[in-house]
Length: 353
Image 1 (spheres, rainbow, N blue to C red):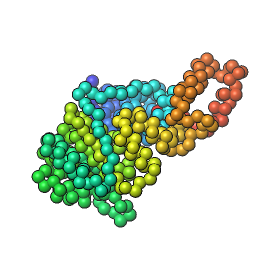
Image 2 (cartoon, helix red, strand yellow):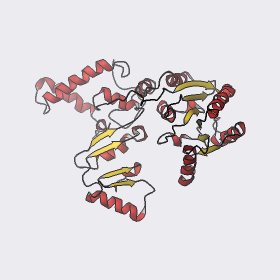
Image 3 (tube, helix red, strand yellow):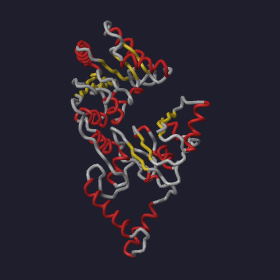
Image 4 (cartoon, rainbow, N blue to C red):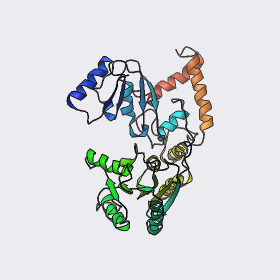
């Protein structure tokens, strides 16, 4: 099998060779980033698309992959945190779902706690204890530098503060504005246990695996969505040791934010979190590209509460489609007519999981 890589960093002759190999069919498997979506990336015969970290792609972006073959390819989407729109689509039968709902052997559930800024001494106490046991720590900030517009913790100030508070330990930092080589070098140092505390922005949200890291501290956790918090928490708990996630917020937070933080404290189940996200943010637009928000136009049912009833309705609708695909049964006339009224756009976004 000929496997190739395509990212934004692949340029010049190498890029041209990859693009040509895809068109001729010489390349069998292409692994890539969002670069794969670009219009000039064409395939000889695309049969299967696997989209990892599905929540990092927009609906229209995923749709582009559907269009790269005359016959749409088979599609597998994977995520630890289904976005509300995806969860809604599972209820509507547009996705076949497989759920991995157990931890790998030897792993322990991550303990998640909510603390306020005033609890800093207790947070440092936990950090000290874990560092003394030889473990490592992540601290995530919402901003790189301080800004007058927002009263939020920032990475640069945090780096200085942590370096002073833990003088006997090596502290490193990673953020999106660093050069890729510098970023990779810092991540490698942390992975090799040359540094003990890594302060970063959300660039570590996916693709980072350091089993020795046992503490994830998220500053200004009120600034992050549920799926992002769940992804960040997933950076720890990858070894056999007990791991912790500390969500740090201001004391004054709104009711919706408080509920969101409480969901994280109460469960580590990605689907449970997605259900709560659905309740808090709405299902998005199943026939459009919006992935959350909007009150879906159901007269009585509630997507998050009435899953069983909606499943029966979905199966009944599917039975009509299966028995009368050419719309010839007079008793189904009103259904087909109403469906055509609802289908206002030419693009069927509802087919894009």
